[in-house]
Amino acid sequence: MNCEDLMNIPKIYSGMKLIAGGSGMYRNIRWIYFADCTQCLSDDFKVSQLIHGGELVIVTNAALTDNDDKMLSMIVEMNQKNIAGLVINVGQISPMLTEYCNDNELPLFELSYDLHLIDLSQIVCKALVEEESNTNSIDQLLAAIIYSSNINDADIKIRAGYLGTNISDKNHIVVLKLNKNNKLQDSYENMQRYIRYEFKNYGLQKMLMLWQIDTGIMLIPSELFSRDLLSNILTRIIDHISSYYGIDAKAGIGSAYEYISELKKSFQEALNSIKISHSESKSQKIFFYDNLGIYSLIAQIKNDKFLDEYVNNHIGKLIQSDVLQEGDLCKTLEAYLDHNCNAAAAAEHLFIHRNTMRYRMDKIKKILCCELDDLDVYLELKMAFEIKNYRESQKDQS
Figure 1: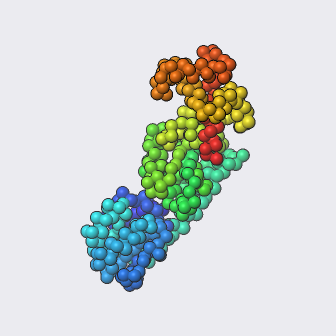
Figure 2: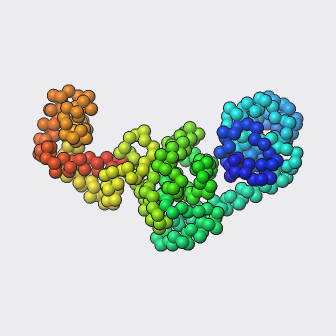
Figure 3: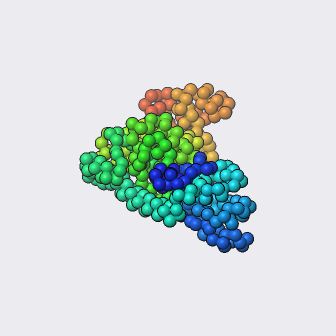
C-alpha cells in the first residue's frame, strides 16, 4: 500500500489532508511509527536507529512540532532511511517543514482531531495485512500461469476474479531484469509498490506481478497499453530504479496472446529479449520480442554446441587470426557485411583509409578461402556474426 492507496480509504480521506509532497504519493507504507516520545527531544537521540524504511511517521507532540530546528533535523534523518510519509496534527505544521517535504517529495499529511490515533493505526494495519495476503495470492496465480504445464483458462479467470482482478482477452508478459545487487534485499518490496503505482496511474488497478530475486515478472493487458505507452512507463521505472537504487535494469516484452495458456510462451520470449539485449545498443533498455528479427530465430535453437560450431566453421579462422595477431579482421568483415558489401562505406564507418580496407579485405578472403560477393557466402557469414554476437551476449549475462 502506498500513500495514494491510503488516501483512497474513505475514513482516512475524511480525516487526513495532504499538505505537501504530493509528487511522492507513490511511497510505500510498511508500518506505522509514532515519533512522540520525549526522548526525541534529546540532542543525543538518533531516530534513524529505530527506522527501517517505509514507515508512516506520526508526530503529535507539540513540544516537538513547535521546535522547528529539532523537528526538521529529525525528519531529514528519517527521510534518509526512506520513510513513507509524515502525519502531523492540524495546526502544528510549519512552513519550513512544508517546504522541505515539497522539495523532497515526502508526503506530509495534516491529521484532524476527528480521526483518533487508535482508529488511524487500526485502519492502516488492517489494510497492510489484507494487502499482504492478497499480494501473495496474486503472486501464486501468476506463477501458475507462467510455470504450470497444464492450466485451464476459465479456472484462472475465476481465481483472478476472486482476487479482485480481471485478466483481459489479450495479454503479454513483461520481464524486468536488475543487475545483481545483494544490497537490494530490503528494497524489492518498495520497488514492487512503485511499479504497481506507475501502472495504476493508467488504469491497471491490480496488476499480476511476481518477484523472484532480481527479476520482476508482470502480466500486462495489451488493450490498455500501446507499445509506446508501455515503453514510456518502463523507461520511467528503469530510470527510477537507477536514480534511487543506483543499479541498471532492462525490460523484455513478449508477444501478446489471447489465451492464458499461451502466456508461458510470452514469458520465454521476454526472457530471450533480455538475453539478446547485449547484441543491441548498449544504451537501449527496452526490448520487444517482435523487434528482435533474426535473433528471435536464433534464440529458439537450444543447442549451444551447434551454434558455436556454426560460428567456428564459418569465421573461426578469422577469430583465431585476430587473437594471435591482435587484429581487427572480424570487425572489418562485419562492417563490410553490415554495409551490403560496400567497402567504401565500411571504411568510412571504421574510420580507416580505403587502402587499409582493401588490404584487410584481401587478407580476409585469403584466410576464409571464399568469394565475399557470392550471395550464399554473404548469408552464411552474416548469420555467423549474428550467432557470435548472440552467444557473447549470453556469456556476458551468465
